[in-house]
Image (cartoon, rainbow, N blue to C red; front, top):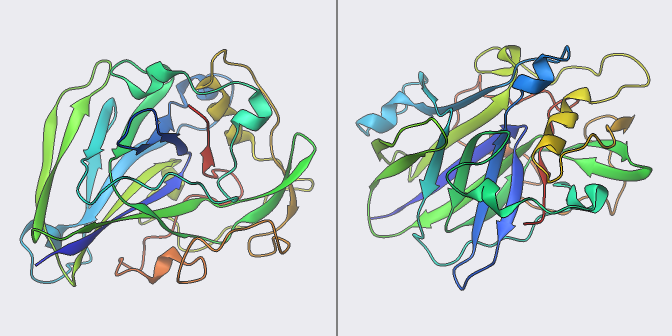
Length: 280
């Protein structure tokens, strides 16, 4: 009995460690891009996917069930001890560049400029895709666009999770989902329409030289006070970060695609929608 619950985050996902109490947690904020769109940017969509086979157990169907989680928080309770909240270097702490923390209200019922949230009460970062190399506010950094979180679940073979309403959202349940091949894999996206499954067949190429990741400015609206800061400028493509700029955050040497995911699960554009972090 038991399984590995894996949640793979891709796109604009802000990891915010929370160690304010004895029981630590990781909050993943998915910023609302609507203000970005009004200034000529692209709309990003918050979606959760899982293989339909988990609904009954047995075998993977290779058909993905899409779930809209707009104005909701997916809650993964404390299933296996505290969450390990240390971030690898390729999840860059934006509080270093904004000189502002993430406001505590962003982890509550009425967050600002946050479309959805995932709160992880247990587990740890178990994988991340290779990142590209960027200059951000004059500092060279490596940034990944895709991160895997794993929670070991020892006392059951299925799970139901709660979706709690945020702002105008409503409460509901997700599941029950039943393990297949000793795991359940969920995919959380905050990405443009062309990056949602099954549209992205592989890693795209950066557009133009010098290339800037303009979608990144959406993150800064989460901080208090909000203010536009530096936009990452590309120095080297995916997989070419210099030694010492990345942590080995995966036993698969940074390849989340080693899971039992359907082949069409790729990820958001690694040259536009990178994962980031912040200090609460």
